[in-house]
Image (cartoon, rainbow, N blue to C red; front, side):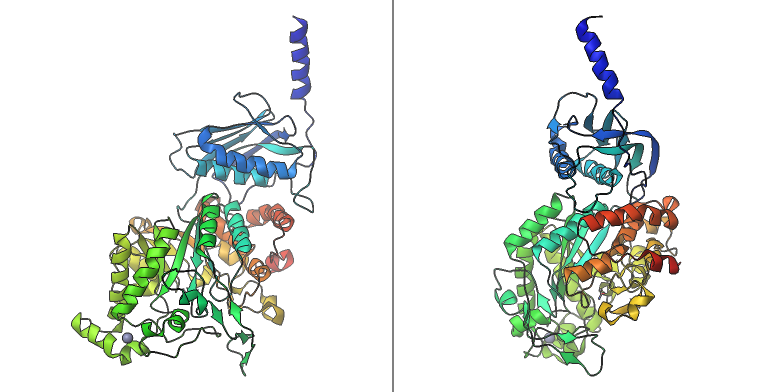
Length: 544
Ligand code: ACM
Ligand code: ZN
């Protein structure tokens, strides 16, 4: 043996015995993977660790390097060799689901296989949860970090895993939207449904119709307390805001970088009073209209006159340019027909189109918009009211008033997204005790963590063939009673994490007790990220 070989052997021996740090997190991953098996020992990330990846995975590898750089004092170098102490990404076309990944951690390497960057990104999200829980500040600046030996294979149950945010009732800054997206990505949510227009505010810049944000983005006052309180009280504060098209692009890109598609929602024909306040000629009565300061259902909706379609097509022209995804959500919920019943133009249209009533008129409205969007290569999603009066030919139904809409739509061979109030409305109270606390006002209802977790997205009434039309579940976050980012986080976490597991994990692999066990380090991670979560373990245990 040459001296060089002896030296190498000694180095290898020393390296193979790299000390395992004490702080190893073997709790698990949320959402629960298809399979996960821990072994003995750990891979140690320190200044020797290198990273190897095909060019296609560069953004994901960079994401991981940057994350690790924030935890450990190292700048990982890219390498071309599959040496020891290397994190190795491999593109493996045999993994058919592009969200699937395999993750293998040994004391020598971390190997990540996926057919696409998307799957590799999810492996990285899992890897993050296998790291030690950050202490205090996210930037721990340790010299090393241990990852437990483990073998994971994973792929999602549903291809659509959504989370909605209403920015109409309250407006949230770009930085918060990014944080919201970051948290979605952490739990492998792949769709951000961005509810952008409401009676109480129009939140997206449309260059062709500047009044929408000059007028429609601001209200003069807002109801104080619950809107059903008697007597009603009002503040006198002008409130509002909107996203410029540049900001929208920035957010879409930010989401894209995290493999999240943004679905914008432009509400029609109802929840449109902010638009009518901006352009009163689009209503049946001519106004006056106001950007509303009170929640609930408002009867001033778009008139079915030609100007409305010209306007909406102009709006959608800009919206489709901004959002590259397949879907545009056109609302369709809660549109009272009072004004249409009294309106000459609307009644004349009912007669000339041979429609039987105002429900069919709404169906005519949605059909026309669908046709327009289909011609631009987009598909529509609507709340389940779009079933009334006849479903537009290619529409996807978002079932919120229970699951009846989903059942009906799936039986008509339409895709459905499951968001029933019973399990998916994160604006409902999460604890009985919160109902007694006037500082934690919510819209009402009661949706504890365990109930979110118990949600089964495929209604039992459907045949297996019909069940295939269920794209997946979504958590909805309506913000009438969430004025601040902190309140949103309080209401959303940890319930959105339970919904993430509903959307990702197979039925057989779901286990609520085990979920709560895995939740503990995740909560500490959220705390290190400055998330004002609402997790109260003693309350959660009580509700079972
Ligand atoms: C809804 O909650 N109005 C869709
Ligand atoms: Zn009308």
